[in-house]
Length: 432
Image (cartoon, rainbow, N blue to C red; front, side, top):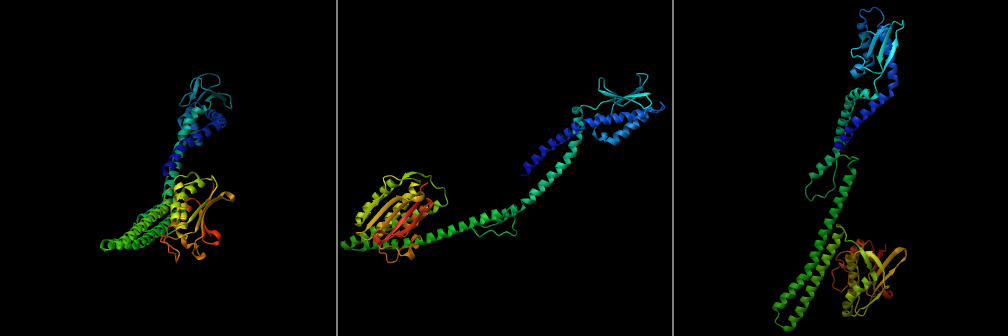
């Protein structure tokens, strides 16, 4: 900042000096002509009288005029050049220290008694006058710009002092210290930075708390199935009865499947958490109807194994711009959750429709036990399971679905299920 302002001053200094010099030179041409005429009349009157001492009188008068007009500060080039002679002859009686140049424009002035004539050189051309004037203006302007440069340097350093103090305060913090920054004095320059940093520290603190809670919950959820797997493996090794060994092997396989499913859900949840802090993948044009049919077909074997009637109502095509992987996760979790918690012989219906105001609704409804109104927000919490449910699960499916829906710019709403029973989960998306 100081360097750029210094460069601006450095460029402005000669430019302004030149402008002032040009203005003085060109605007004062007429007054200079009149001044030279007045000087000539004064000089020719000073030459009147005895011839002895005439040159001295002329030199004294010239020096007085120079001092009065400050020409000695500007330069010798602007000093008047003259020649004095008698009205009756061409011989020079006296002349200036610098004689008139041949062919130089001049003024011819007579004394009041008509005995003397003074030929004085006309005002120099503007180009000839520019350099002396510029040589005088430049040093004068230089002092002004040096003062301005010093003032800018001091004011910028003083103005940036709060930022340096803030940087020192941040550098002195210990690693992992996410407490809000405390400043001794609030500066308008640093207040937005402090507020933004404190907001960032608060978000990071909340994220770390969430991750710690997530790890604690995950460790708790993994402890029970792993203990069961260990017990069944021990029983399988120690039990001599073939029937009991077969039962132990079946239980062991189910326990491993449960642990595997829990790990998959944990990894999916971790990826969903990471999506909030990283750049999202690029969206693409999708056919929601075809995508819903594809995901429903993949989960149809699970529905048949549990004697669940899985139906689908959707148009032939429905275009939407979004991210495929996140939408897969939402649909799979909603369908899997509905199939697992619907009793055998029940129904699960997936539907897709376009609503007013450019909103799309992808709904999964069932006729199962349903969800009490007091628990409708709790079911989206991680590891929360409805009390009294006999179905083994991880309690992560709906939490993952909601997080993915939010990353898609949508939301999930809970409503009534089929035929007055069960529940429905609707994914609402903008069609833009």
